[in-house]
Structure formats: C-alpha cells, structure tokens
Image 1 (cartoon, rainbow, N blue to C red):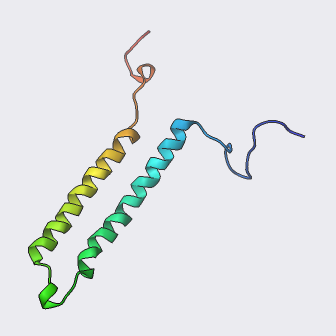
Image 2 (image 1 turned 30 degrees about the vertical axis):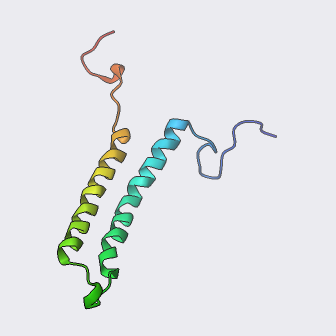
Length: 96
C-alpha cells in the first residue's frame, strides 16, 4: 500500500499550496464578473412599465453606467493579485 500523497486519476495533488488555491479562486471570481454584470444590466428591464410607476430613462442610464464602472473596478481589483511577480533571480543582467 502506498502511503504517499493522494493523486486522482489524471489529476494533481489533492491539496495545493494556499497561494495557488487563492490564485485559482481569484481566477474563478474573474470568470464570474461578466455573468454578474449581465445580470445587473438586465435589472432595468424588470422595472415597471406602468406609467404611474415608470422609472425615468436618465435613472436607468445612470444605473447601467454605474454598473459598468463598478465592473471595471472589480475586475481591476481582482487582477492586481493575479499579476506575475518578478523574482530577483528572474531579472536579466543581475549577477549575484
């Protein structure tokens, strides 16, 4: 019987480093942002069409562009930790 680390069929180790795990979850969150944006952009379509309860077009446009700006900000914040980190030994021209 093998007492080494568990491996799935065609998979890597069962548990990964904390940094790798967080990086993968951030990539998953980056994939969900457009879906959330699509949902939020569809909200003005659900607003009442009755004349007495109608929402002004200006308010709907402000909502749509506010969601757009928020999506840009969220995508930017998610992308910050996903940037590649230059290690000192990876920089060319530096001899230690």
